[in-house]
Image (cartoon, rainbow, N blue to C red):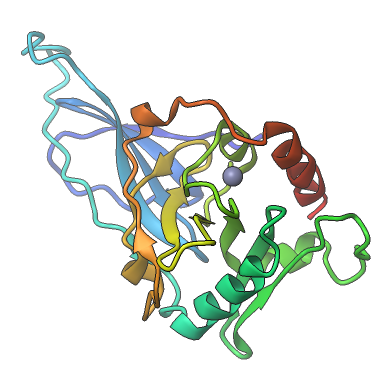
Length: 230
Ligand SMILES: [Zn+2]
């Protein structure tokens, strides 16, 4: 069990988190800060104190912390990989397909597709193999691209997560978020990760709007069951 620190922000620069993430209490609320060696560094404000409460924590001399921008720790993903996985997902409109976009400094980029039918061998796809996955992206076939409650349960790590949808249309939808170990930074622009988005139309989601029912829930629950093996 890792002890996660909570810092008070009193105006002096804080070192970035040493181990995955930490929390900062500042004048206006609570910030979660993530510093992953592989994926990204990012800050997200989790709690904002009500404005009516102008002196919320008297005596702590808190200052207002400025959020750091998101910084991926890897080079841009070649747009052709997005085209490749789009083409593959369009061949599979009757189901959802998961893709792992992987990077290692010597071998470069590649995309793998764990077999969600359960036929695939787990050989060569153990825990160690997870470490080079920078982006997990799955298709919602002809349905819109959004993050379902099932996705929320499953995407608890610190990497980037994406969904492609409306694959039967000329401009398929793409949505990306960054995992913060239980929270997410939504609305990551596609060009933050890819050097080219091809035909994709980016969808920006307002998380409170996403409390809609999960389409094809039982099927997705099934695919995510297999995903957990990885
Ligand atoms: Zn999904």
